[in-house]
Image (cartoon, rainbow, N blue to C red; front, side, top):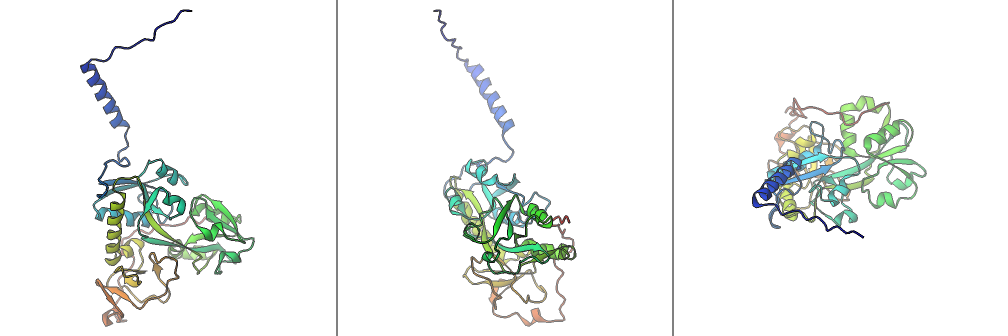
Length: 352
């Protein structure tokens, strides 16, 4: 048997080694993404200087820039106020959690909390609340108080959403998963499902902007069947993760109090805990917000309780139990809202 000794390459000289290292470094810079996850390590008591987040297309909460994306706008503004550069990439439906587990991204701007996700993510205080109602074709059973009333009804849900026990333990409905709300709407209009679970804010926007068209074909429930607080989530192993969330929470509180939420959500009135004392206040978008609402307004992160109209108001940075007479003067013209020049986006593509 003839054996051949393995060939041993000579070690590169100092000059050749330096050239090799420089070439490899240059290749790494060329291949690196422009805004990489965990680009800079921060001490555990300091937030990272910048973050790369991932989300799915979920209008009007998240979408590519240039589209309506109120959740991303809120999170980006809060992180910017906290001194943290940030960017969100919209990726394929159902891929966000796997990408976070793999460390590809630092977190996600709009996530529901679940025990499984808590194993690898830290969550902010809720900054919005998804309030899910039923949407159906004309005559569908949408005026109900519990999903258990929908015996044998085909209910469209989104496969990647963490709905919780209200769906996983429900007896009666037949849940039909889809990729997103738009796909469920298309199937609803095609008669493939009977109703779909949908966020109330989407309903508000649709009625406001496409009301006459949608009213011909759709009915909407008025009872919130599921409440899911919406959070900024970051990986537990992200250096400075908790410090980032602490600064984010502080920034959100100032944004609630100064009207930023009203502006981003394009709502004249919202209900929120403006001063952090655990009690809701009615918050106008600014002076002369128009007539008081006569039913519960859009509520920001109340937990599981059904919101009710409050007698407390947040006016000019103070809590008051009644509106000043100047605010109630019927001769005072309400300021136009949304503000003139603001682009209105179509929330749903209604394909009949």
